[in-house]
Every structure is written in structure tokens, then in C-alpha cells.
Image 1 (cartoon, one colour):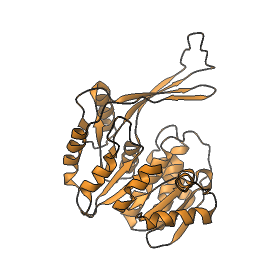
Image 2 (cartoon, one colour; image 1 turned 135 degrees about the horizontal axis):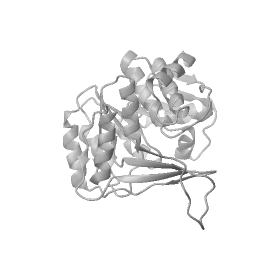
Image 3 (cartoon, helix red, strand yellow; image 1 turned 180 degrees about the vertical axis):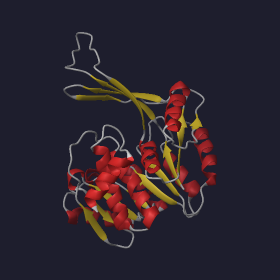
Length: 301
């Protein structure tokens, strides 16, 4: 069983316009509303791959109810904590000649709310996966990830952490099964370049020395590199195609890697499926459907 945590989900309101004018009324040429949040994205792709999972985190107000309704409609199992005040945020994405994203703060998350989330996680058992993805919202306790991982420590749980900077470093002591920085985030961690295979491998092994099990480094158009817990290094090139949507591509890679490992126990296959899922979302208007994933997977096998 896989549990995903999204502390600050969102409804993404995307508007397509012509050239923007700040002196006149601008009129949209089309709108879409979709759910967003890195952990939620992982749950969606896992579900499309047939992997049992449950999405957890925090929701609030009428927007939270709508987000959950949309997830359930898409077959995503949910068990969110509802906050007493505020509303789940709406992020506005304007697609004109240039892209403009305005992300909201979201509702206040208190330590008591974290405790309610921990209660829901008490069902997690040895061998399960818990995915924590994304930056901590400013309106939450800044040690929230450490509180969660500390609560589950010692239960034989496979932690997956997709975060960056100091937040990633702070959770390495809990020995996560998988971390997935991109090559830029990896370089920022060590204040150095992480462009070549040798540089990426070097810094990935330093993260392993600090506690990480498997280090999956996404490299955009260069594919991905994995340093696994057995010490082996695997590389895979990017699948070619037209970039339509980069949002959720990294989350899709995480989901594909987890699914591939659960299905086969092979890091090699997990890397291939992760790469296929990431590409499938990049070449789709929203998160990839199963048919697109299968198409991309056939290209890398």
C-alpha cells in the first residue's frame, strides 16, 4: 500500500488569453480547473498504473470539498484532514504569450492538525510506502515532515521524499527509501555544478552517506540517473517528444519508479517506468493517462 501526503493541495485555475493588457479588461479564450499538489499527482499516476494507494493531507472549506469530489470522481482513494478555518487554495495560471502563475498561500495548519494526520497514518505497516512531496507551506509548522517521519520511524516503512534544499537534508536521518532531486537541486545542495554523470554520482553518494537509500536524479532533456541502494549506477536517456506540460512530470517519475519497484523489485525496471511516466505527462496537457504511459514505456524498453 502507498500513502501520499500533500500538505497544501490546490485547485489550479488555468486561463488561456491573448496578449495581456494591464490597462484594459482581458478576456479569456478558455479555462480549465484541475486538482494540484505533488503528492496528489503521485496518487493519480499510481492509480492509473493499478497500484493501490491513498491520498492524505489537509483540505479546507468549499474548495477543499470540490477538490476531494474531483479526486473521488477520478477513482482516487482519499482520507484528508479537514481544517476548521480557511479554504483550500486556488492557484491561477495565465497562459498568454508568456506564462504567469499566481500561487495562493492556503489555510493555516496548526500542530494539532498535524496530530490528526498522524492518527490517520497509524494504519501504516511494515513494507508500505509513504510519499512526502513538495515544499512545506509557510503557514505550517516548519518541522512538519520531521514530525511525520519520526512518528513512523522504526515501523519498516519505505519513505519517499521529493523535496529540496534544507528540507531534504533534514529528513535524511530517517533513511528514506527514495529521494528524487533534479540535477539543479542537487547542485544547489552542495553549492556546486551537478551536470556530468560523474558529478551527479559523486553528490548522490554523499546523500546516501547521510542516510538516503536510492537517489534518483532527473535531468530534464538528458533523462535520469539512479544510484541505487546496492551501489549500482543506472542511466536512462530522455524520451523524445513535444513538450506540452512540464507540471507534474517529476511527480509522475516518482510514481512510476515506485510502481515499477512494487511490481518487479527491479531498480532497472523502476527507472524505466519512472522515465516513461515523466515523459508521458510532459507530452500530455494534464497528468498522463495509462495509454500514453504505455506508449512511452514501449519506447524505452
